[in-house]
Amino acid sequence: MAVVNLFPPLVPNKIYHGDSQQILRRIEQESIALSVWSPPYYVGKGYEQDLSFEDWRELLCEVIRLHFPIIKPGGFLVINIADILCFKDENMPKIMAENVSLRKIALTRENVFKVQKQHPGWNRYRLAEHFGCSEQTIDRRLNGNNVRGGKYQTQTRVYLVGGLIETAAMNAGFYLYDRRLWVKDATWENSRWHTISYRSVDESEYIYVFWKPGITKVDRARLTKQEWVNWGSRGVWEIPSVRSNSDHDSKFPAELPRRVIKLLTEPDEIVLDCFMGSGTTALAALSEGRRYIGIDKEKRSVKIAREAIKSFKTYHKEPEQMDLMIRDLEARYEGT
View 1 (cartoon, rainbow, N blue to C red):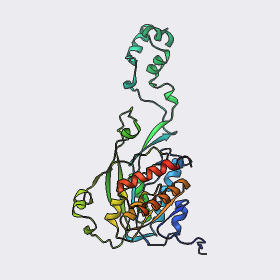
View 2 (cartoon, rainbow, N blue to C red):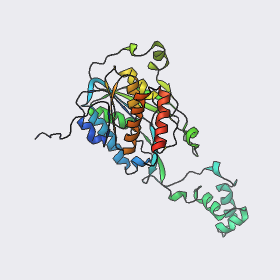
View 3 (cartoon, rainbow, N blue to C red):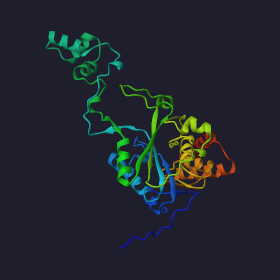
């Protein structure tokens, strides 16, 4: 028996509140020229705290699968995400690094072992008295536990996302068409965080472009000659990050989806963002004469997006102004 959809189909130029895994089913088949979005990154944001890693992975795969019927043949699915995720993993061995860079006392394990061999009866308190340090320092040197209680802390796991996304897209019927590198502001410039390991400071993300088999119109005239030279044909896009102090900032600046939209779609075609957030993609679509469909499960985000679109239609704004407008709206609605 065929399943009857009791809900009306989605119409363009609206932001819909709800779960993408449900609402995507209501979009007319082969009606979307481009879907461009940035999913939850699984980094502990408020809107993803209830997700386990497996839940997050299943969400990503299911959303990608649901895109294949609604994308036009020859159309594109574009996903922006950090290629390397870092998150706490209870299954990893709970062993801390011996981080000599953080030591306040120039005392090595070898120093302690040497004195311990000379005085086998000395406990850590006697050793601490000898070296003029705390017994916790002795314990950390002897046990390779450089951080107080570190051997009991949950370790940070590093996970590559590109393979997961490509596999999910291939299983859905898409093919990887292109991958661009978005160079943004280094993380520490925004959060004042600095690495305490050999891991690098995050300063780039990837833009994965997937193609649905069909005739794709290639038209360089969509861009000016200068645009084609500066970014249309370039694999690296240098775009400053959005700066916002709110709890739910835009995942990407308006210039990023604007470039994708202008490069891959024609005027009046429909652009979809199933994790719309504050409305960045909708604003970029409107600025380039395209229609949009937005979906988000957070009521606050939907409210901000709708207000931003209303303001944009009243006062046409450039990409830089769009980011400032969204930031101001987020600040206004903070706590709602």
